[in-house]
Image (cartoon, rainbow, N blue to C red; front, top):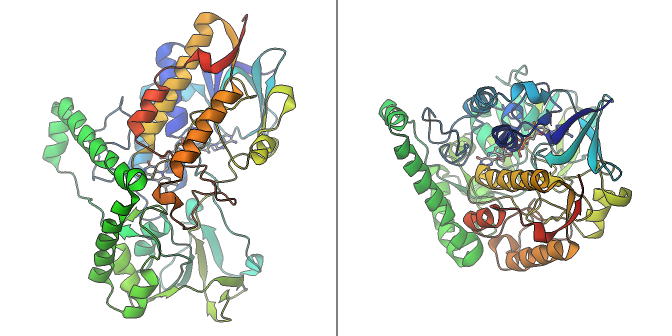
Amino acid sequence: MADKACVLIVGTGFSGLGMAVRLKQAGVDFIVLERAGDLGGTWRDNHYPGCACDVQSHLYSFSFEPNPDWSRQFAPQPEIWAYLRKVASKYNILPHIRYNANVVNARFDESTSTWVVTTADGRTFQGQSLVWGGGALSNPFIPKTAGMETFEGEMFHSAVWRHDVDLRGKRVAVIGSGASAIQFVPQVAPKAAKVDYYQRTAPWVMPKPDFVRSDLSKKLFRSFPALQKLARGLTYAMLESRVLGFVVHPKIMNMLALVGVRHIKKYIKDPAKRKAVTPVFKPGCKRVLISNDYYAALARENVNIVTDGIAQITPKGVVTQDGQSREADVIIWGTGFSVQEMVPKGLFQGLKGADLCDVWSRKGGAEAYLGMTVSGFPNLFFMMGPNTGLGHSSMVYMIESQVQYALDAVLLMREKRLKHVDVKPEVQEGFVTRMQSKLKGTVWASGCKSWYLNDSGKNTTLWPGFTFIYRKATRTFRAADYAVKPGR
Ligand SMILES: Cc1cc2nc3c(=O)[nH]c(=O)nc-3n(C[C@H](O)[C@H](O)[C@H](O)COP(=O)(O)OP(=O)(O)OC[C@H]3O[C@@H](n4cnc5c(N)ncnc54)[C@H](O)[C@@H]3O)c2cc1C
């Protein structure tokens, strides 16, 4: 017998919990399915040393649950995870969560107009709507590398950090130079005997405007919530102005390059190292990173920057394409997440048994109306879906916009007694065409290879504009954009 609810939610990160809170407040029944044994998504899984957000915490948090007590301007992972646990408990979401529920199939049953969801352990759940908050950065990516299974030391990905592996005095190979690596390398380098840092492309890393929040500021925010709202608003406006560089006039980003180069020069004196860490693309084309200790760590004598590609892993270490072999006791993969393989085959089956993986393959990549709904897959709402990621501000802002839209749809279906809503193909197509044409002139299309683009060069990940425009577009669910099936 399937466990039933009006709405099934997948995931317990910001998306799943945000959706759950709003449904709870609206009096709609729901079940939350989480594949892990605890809640928290990104902030449960990524506990590598140095992990913190890179958007100011007063903005990188729910608008309905301000936290006056963030210890720093950019809070570390344990605080963000604790914040999410507090939200789940305060809004009484915990009884709705089913843990160890790894969703392996979601099938739209046309006879009942419901989603029937199956988990890896054989449980089934049924709901009129399905909200997918499975995360865009939740599946660690390790590139298939010859010989990797032969390595005799310890090897792990940054998103499944092995705290039991003592790095003191060890020869550590770090592979990858993305957002996570720039946070953990400064923590690893002082402990390790030696770090070989395998960097395919040098990222732009700007100074981080981080600081400890004083007791006085916490007290003021606690006593005068309007003050905290104001601080959040100012941060929002400041970050939003970056869209001018990313989207409107990418030439502005050249100025950022000056800041980046000065940042490198401040910490790195060795000309060869300077050259190795100086990016060769426009800032913003790949994610702009922020750190105050990254370049100082790379400048250390025990850190060796390797820019040659990796040919193979051997039992003793890493061999690069120039034939050089470097021994390692530990290999840490900082190679990010499988972003472009968002939907495996067999996971979603919509009308007439269509498989979403096939549908998106035929279209040359993931696409959805407002990044949320896909024609032929009624009552399915993606959180952080295609083209709703950001390079300039808080994803929580986007997630809250999506939650509002999905909630509005659920309430409308309830009020009008609709069986299902299915976005019209021409509406979806019009949206996607507008997105892709807007993306053409942006900094992300300025010629670098990044995880924002799929293999055919299509940007399936980013929202090309101001987030308040997205919020306006998602404020209300427009039934006219959908084919509706009445008669619930
Ligand atoms: C290290 C790191 C730092 C980041 N920092 C920032 C930042 O500073 N600012 C910012 O805006 N964004 C940041 N991000 C992006 C971040 O992912 C989003 O901001 C946000 O946390 C995503 O929330 P989510 O709930 O959509 O997904 P997630 O937090 O990834 O949660 C997804 C949940 O779904 C579960 N799940 C997945 N698949 C299934 C399945 N098949 N069945 C059941 N459960 C499933 C997962 O276990 C997980 O709990 C960061 C990401 C990472 C990895």
